[in-house]
Image (cartoon, rainbow, N blue to C red; front, top):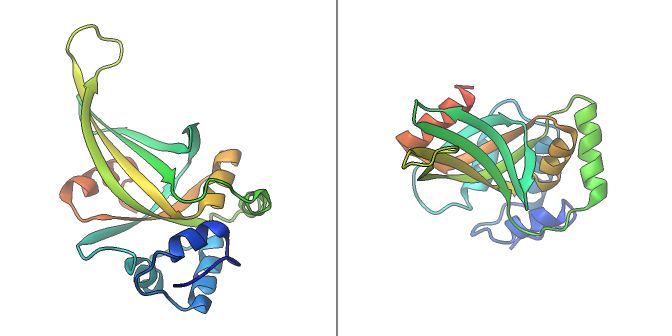
Length: 191
């Protein structure tokens, strides 16, 4: 197992669950690159985080979000109409330790003020459901697709972006499916 405590305590939570732990130097280097933001998906990043996943087919997106804390630990990022009756929502939910180091949050706030868009990493899924349409007394229902990103890395970055009303890039790893791609493109377009 890899202990990545010097990187940050939330990283230790994720890295301690690796089947095949990467070298500590790889994690430090990757952490620094993510802190300063990435413009393209990098093979090393995919290899490292891919070792967390069960065997299967995955799509990986580099998404730009503007998170806002909604309730509890849930951050809302985006909403889009899929058609007249269907809506897509996007949320980010941090996993792991809830206690964050305020000095790290302030560090990312300063980076953001300096024009840096840091990058976080998430594992996502699509939750599809029907709900009663707002403002109706009858049985009008709306189909709702919720793209939910469970944050693996970037807890401090997410809070900093939300505090400032700023943008954050997220490497979103999701099971490969036509429906998830459709919702992702509706929420973000093709980047």
